[in-house]
Image (cartoon, rainbow, N blue to C red; front, side, top):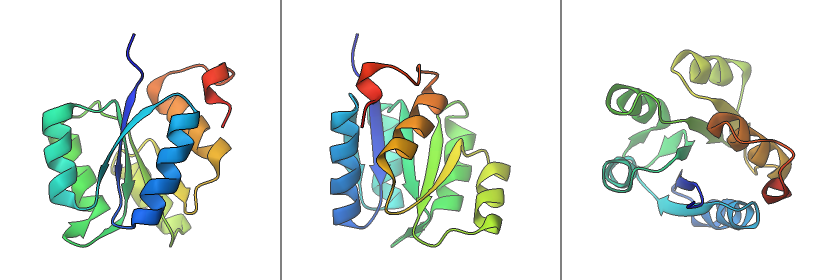
Length: 130
């Protein structure tokens, strides 16, 4: 069985790198995109199992991209990640159908737990020890 593929959509290269390290240690494959356009192309082409999506991107915003994903891939789990979180941001994310909302830098255990829940994977599995 193939490891789950997680698409990281974030314009910050260091964030993508650190999240990719967490995912690799937790037993996930990953793909990276730095823009909304690249992220949507990756979803259409590679069909990831989940998306980690930044809210602020150079060619749009994560909320708009989340709406597009909901229209085209309604069952694809999306977890929003942002450096500028607030209760309003978390509420908007939930209202738009996000499966979670994390503050950057992402806590490895929280990231793994959010992905496990979004993907319906057991939380206590060895592959989730971040």
